[in-house]
Length: 425
Image 1 (cartoon, rainbow, N blue to C red):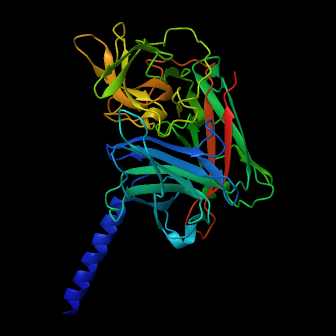
Image 2 (cartoon, one colour):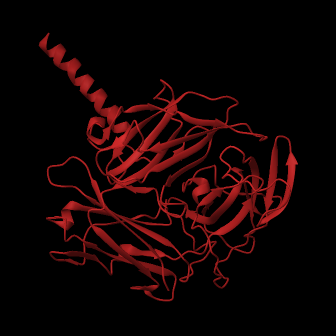
Image 3 (cartoon, rainbow, N blue to C red):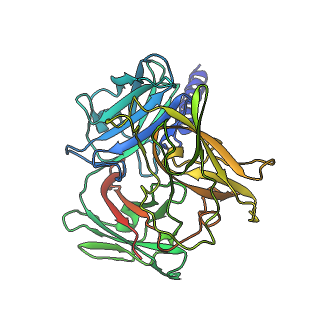
């Protein structure tokens, strides 16, 4: 009998372990349900700032998305605290939030006078029901009410303590050469008022270029450190391909063609915007353009408001003429916030044998968009701008440095500081 009980208990433990392990994949901002569109995670600091806020301040995160339905649906959300690698931390919800761990999405509004019906939802954090207790990475999971096993989307952001100052610079003067294809990031951490015993073992540092996740760099060993300063310089992991300025287009009106649009038409039930044909830029000289570094802005020209409920949806036709190139084996993806910085069938270009062009259609809300073409070689996971866009050292890139600290004895990674810099020649 005792053996049987021990056996049952062992099976239960194994079952729980398998399920916990299966749910421990890193969180990423992503639309899971095909009815979810225009998912955005923004900081109150403004459009051109990353989704990061400071703990115990008036700053907030706003999550917005559209659900393609005729009527409002009851939705709920849960908040998950994550470690530096975006896997769930060991903290219970009582330890990282002040409030109930399941909340309803109260802020919603039906679309108005649009061909595509949708419900626009907004979640602002922190709010009257939820306050953050600790710093770190957070993932919001949205799902139909009482159906937590069927997530609609994940929305990720970070909360920083700003306990240390992170000074970040980026330059085309790299350890691989000057005025070439690369940019090198250097940064230092001013820890004068914060105690870090062992930077090598206690710190986890991630560096991102233009909010991309595929080429994110992880560094652990500083060049040197003293009582006040930890320096990360001349690190080969911090040399990034320079890439090129993002391409742009606007679909802000149903009455006239916006920037980068070649043809505008209507086929029930959508307006269609055929963009001007794109060509590879790897052999062209650099041309400056003031972009949003991969982001997009929802906007409808006939309304003064931002267009959360007045903007309609367009079928956007992309085409890339790479017939003069000998491309290696792999895939071309449309990259930027419009594709949630992910590589999937939703943004993978397909070769049309009849036209010889790489083509893709995407359903996008009216607004101003940035995008670029990344080539992912077969068997790899990191996109390369060099193949289609080229690497131009003059490119204006945004770099973000997240500094996490695992205090000895604690069970989570604190986000103690964030640095941000724009590349310079």
